[in-house]
Length: 75
Length: 535
Image (cartoon, rainbow over all chains, first blue to last red; front, top):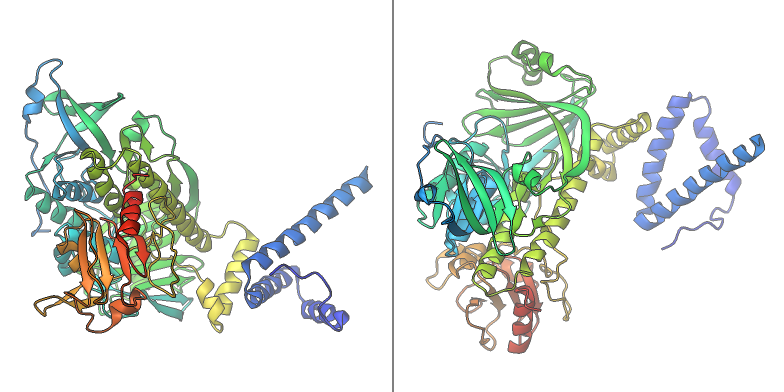
């Protein structure tokens, strides 16, 4: 199975909101703890190492894109 | 240690009196009389090869080294005639428990099913294992074990290796068709052939203490993350024979070894762990771990095995056990090559199979070590998340890595014949033979692994059902379950996914070379040729 990047939630705003609200009132360190647990729980739920690897690639590529954009803005 | 001889004398050998160019020539010289070198020499000798075994010391080393020997290693030692003695002395175990803080996260059983001759593991001090192996060596006239013989120079020639060996009487020369270097992690032979030994060094230090005490702790492997007696770090407790307990404590990477090692500093920490201080130290040492391997295990006619070829962290019992698997993998191949039954190319499969096994062992033990000693703040966070999730979820428990214990590798190897028939289970080609209880012709209880040994530890056809008798090539043993052997509990059939006429071709090391739903002589000959390196 390939990583699905089409929109899977009927109400995407609800999903985004649920995650945001989970972080409300947390310190940076607490947020990082929460994210670590959340990633592991969701990764296990997906249960497909190829999908997980694709997701990691997508997340990392976005990081590279962001840092490239920042560099261009600075130039 | 009263019952085992550990000190041996140097004896001058006639090879040392040969003059000038009249150098003694031997088929195999094994360097290093540790568990791997001793086991290899015994296996070769039992196959009829004469072996010169050199060791630079004259005694079996004491102290805290390997303690966990796997089922696979015990099955190998059964073939060498020392399995019973190891198991009688050893502490049998199969259950491990993992704790986080003061509470147990989960427990696991490494051999949850019945019907195997050998347990998942025994714990036995390495010096006992070596002493029993030396006793066996002394029963075999084919082995010439020379203590205080240190290889100081090695020269590779086309058809032999020339060794210079230093002894208390001065040095002498030896020629060998093949040299097997089992001379440990600091292998001097590895340096002599100029081979690399690349890998990863771990910064964290671990303190290993063997303590003597009488205790009611069960014979299980107990592992703690962040225990109350050793906050923030990990700890391991494991029983050995003679009321000796192995304790392994993770220290900070900046801990001062000289200070940490002092008994007055170690004692209070262990007293907190055990809840009392009624124990004596047998041994204390500090370790840093490395995971590394040689790129090639074969350098011309010099072959590397055990720690000389690969090194892992100890979490997982993958050091000595993988070395013993090297020995069982190499000996039958070397025997065939020396007899001219197989081309030298067969030896390359040793490098292919055991190189892949070394990669697997390094991967597993690196992951365990990384889990115990996270490298970054975020890695530590992920580790903490796993540990906290483990308390209430099954997936969390299975992600906790307190050491993944050694199981035999499954080889992807040119010696295997790919499956053509359909299988729902059973060992695939490249996997080691599962054990099962059977009765033999006289009605006595035995095991498949024992029956395999009685067939001569050679290529053996393991056939099921009482169908047509298969005409097997010369030199191939036959085991018939349902004709000769009786599958009293039905476990053999189950573990081999057997139907009438199912047959497995086992290699001399007990690995599956090929399997058939219906065997033809033609298919058997082809599989045998392939497994012998003949095509």
